[in-house]
Structures are given as structure tokens and as C-alpha cells.
Image (cartoon, rainbow, N blue to C red):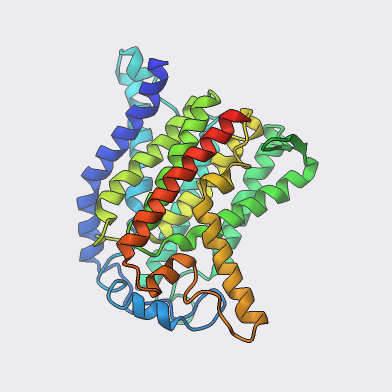
Length: 358
């Protein structure tokens, strides 16, 4: 047990320290190259309409604060994984050698998704701040980002189905449901739904804190299921997020944006399925509980769009997603963030309890 705890917690600390060391360099590069929006606000939302209230709320925040802060998270993870992998060859200490958690059976797929999301998100962020012309200004179109998520999910689902022989999903309190070949479209649907929650990135510290509790919960679940390599991977991401949050708390030094949020949402899909029937657990079933804030974010966005479409433009919320509604109601951004963190922690605990109970 002591060795397991060491294997999970040591990478967390290494990732945090690594993030703290690399952030000044990343931050200096972001500011030197003025990697921020030149015009505040969204301009248009997912529904294609104008977003005047949101634009007003963020008039002073979006400009002069760099995007791409998510680099701190995934680069901390990559450096930590690489460093630990190298250490096993140069150290004779058994404890140090045991730290390596880069394994084909548990972490290759989640790491692959993290890298794809990080690189595509980085390109999107680059277009947002530097793109010009009709086809390059404003970042990658949503349809293209969804295609990347979908294609990655199809490949990963095929790997689960064909290589790992997984076709079942565990339903909390019921048992395993064999989806057969329908496992693949179900996997893709879950991946797209999780990526849709990326709109939670919009207030200083909000998305970072939300994903911190989610990955910490899955680290605990993986330990409970004896998926120690996966637990260490999730804990490493949590360490990288902590370093990011150090600089992202109000007033934010930079924003996570697509290179971070796309990486986290895509790898979260893989982690959820890795901790499901493959790990003898209910990783997918408890995701709506552990990630309740992501669910609320997506649902509030959908309800707003449907209301405007079928109720002659009438809105349910002043601004969607709902965390911006609270801003528009007069809540300070810090108040929204802190309350989201509290809820994120509570529901992460509830999700872990449900996993143990069932």
C-alpha cells in the first residue's frame, strides 16, 4: 500500500513542481508574442447569434491576457512522464524504478487523447490570436474541432472493442450492459458530450478547479480498482492543473483556452471508459455525478438554444452557460468560481462513494 501511495502521489508533486518551474518561461513567451484576443467577447455564440451581455462582462478581461495557459498542464504531464520513464534506467533504487506508469494497458490511450487535444487546441488558439483572413481568423470552426474529437473517439472506441475486447458498459446499481458493436457509437457520443462541456472555461480558475476535482476523483477510483498506472496518470494531471491554477486564480496571468480544455476533455473520455467495465468499475456511470458541473454547463447551453429557437428568441438565462448567468446577475467572478469549486469537491466525493458502494 505504501508503494502504491508513493507511486500515485510522487508524480503529482513532480508535475506541480515542474509546472511552477516552466510557467515563468511559458508566460514570458505568451506576453512577448501578445498571445491574446485583439477584440473582447465572443461576437457570436454557438447558436450563431450575438452575445452582447457576455461581451460586456468580458470587455476588460479578454484582451491583454494571454490564451494558451493550458500548455502548463499538458507540458507538465509530458515532462513528468518522460522524467520518471528515464529515471528507471539510471537509478538503482527500487522505489524510483517503480514510479514509471507509462503502460500500454492503462495509459497509452489516455495520453494519446491528451496529446491530440493539446496540439489541435494549440493550433486553434494560435489562429484565434494570430489568424487573419476569412478562413483563419477566429480559430478552427467548431465543426472541425468536433471532427477531431469524433475521429479520435472512433479510433479509441475501435481499440477498446477490437484490441481490448470491450463491448460492455457498467450501469450503476444494475450491472453490465453488452452493447455489442453499438459500443463504438456510444463511446463517440460520450466523447462529444464531454467535449461540449469545454464551454465551462470562461471565468478565472473555474475550469481548472472543476477538472482538478474530476481527475482527483478518478485517481482515487483507479486506485480502488487496482489500476495504479492510470491512477498515477490522473494524479499527474491534477498536479499540472494545480500549477496552472497557481497562476490562473484571479486576476489570471493567462487563460487555459482550447489547448488545455480540449486536451483535458478528450483524455477524460478515455479515463472514464478505462475505469468502467475494463477496470471492473462504473467509470462512465459516475461521470455525470463527478462531473456534475460539466453536465449543468452543457444542459444550460442546450436549454438556452432550444428556448431561443422555439420561444421566439426568449431566453431562460441572461447568459449561457449558467456560470455567466450568475455573473450577469451581479455575482463577482470569484464568488462563482469558489462555489463551483465547493460543488465540484462535494460531487467528486459522492461519485467516489457510489463507486465503492456499487
